[in-house]
Image (cartoon, rainbow, N blue to C red):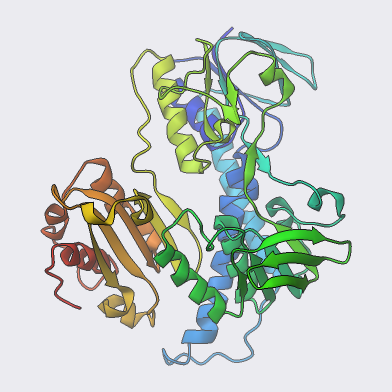
Length: 450
């Protein structure tokens, strides 16, 4: 008899299991594939491993001469990039396996089929586990639909990590986070890339100024970006027919990548439980479903489908199961994109607010001393604050290392800090974080370096 059975060993599931064990609970975790879920195996980790390699390649080509470093006959080998990627994945996976042993969590490798709200059967062995609580952490799968699922060889994001050779040309359908990151990778290696986005601009959940900055960067790399464009058809020869504002366009490539997001993985046994489902499984802010002893975390909820959100939802679920009240706060969730330059944002967006009720401060990367030493000019930092209270409502940065610098904005939004409180904090010089300082100073009307 277990206190808790966690189904799914992704970021949400394994973190929930660890925290429950730390809180004194006896825990079983069921995973049908590899520990780490989408993020570790076919998402965050392999994507960033490949992007790190392609970014280094681009930097050597574009900057080495300026830095006085002589490099001749620069080239790359995909097979070695894939080795680096696979090593990164394996090391991450083994790290999670070690944590399971360290925390005395019983891991079952198999498919967990829920019999009722206290019993789960391991499909492959027919072993039945009993648990007082269940945590549903089944994750998600790439969205694919007609006509794309009818054409052999159409890639989803999962398939990119299996490639043995690079396509000379690729059409990426979807200009969101996944599409932009893969466009950055393929274009950095000199491949012909087309990105087709249905919305008004790529990165549709970000403000337009951020999307425009990334679009300019992609175009500079040779990427063809088609916005406000709907795909009508695709055939076996990977010819994509799309409709834009200027009429019909035809795009031909060696590969087509469908990158329009992911959908929650909700198998029939979960549906039969009677949990409330509205696209994803519905929970309250303690992660409890409409069934008292069943919790759901991560992508299966179909809300904010990010690994770090799933992790914290796992922590929240664990504490509530252990009798400690803890609720999710989604007001300051960081969103990060490993484009080049990187993008990170948190809190409210400028596009969703009344311009008469906010102040906006911006500072360009080109005016930052550390950026100049790095030969970096693209990007900016932006702060959005309430006009009356001066409290920080939202923050975004487009810059090298933006994904590391976002935490200053997260803390400002989460804790209701004011523009003055940040601008009166001494930032180290020379660092990229001074771009952030400049944005906060600008919001006060006191920018020093622009």
